[in-house]
Image 1 (spheres, rainbow, N blue to C red):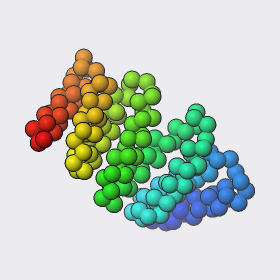
Image 2 (cartoon, rainbow, N blue to C red; image 1 turned 30 degrees about the vertical axis):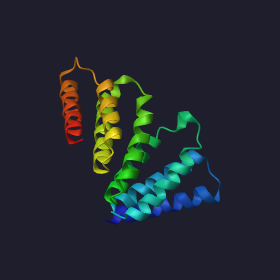
Image 3 (cartoon, rainbow, N blue to C red; image 1 turned 90 degrees about the horizontal axis):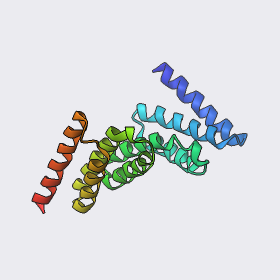
Image 4 (tube, helix red, strand yellow; image 1 turned 90 degrees about the vertical axis):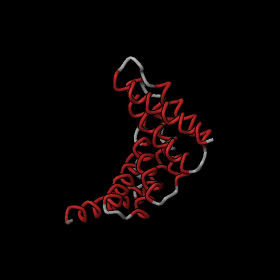
Length: 168
């Protein structure tokens, strides 16, 4: 608990310094991300969300090659929105993360499948079957049916598709 309080104080000071001294936006984004994580770990969802939103605002302005942290921020924001019961926003943040990952090399297939599954769950919760079908299809397209573990995931998405179609 004392380490958490120390970390909170240090990141708060870093954010203040970054803003006051007009430090590099990458440093500012990292400071807000760190502060957001501390609040998230402490279950202070509102403060966590505020800091992650500030991190996103700054990170989106960075050059593309410095936006790698967006993936993690979108993940945290999706989790926060899920905790708040806002499945629309949860799905949006997971979709933004997925968009970035889809641009990366193919070895991210398992992460793509995990994100697609989370997005499908959000869309099913919101009764948006067409959107859920779209993300099932994205997952299937990005998985490799020659790999045993991917075949299991593919089967899971086909079961999900069948369930969606049977409920229409």
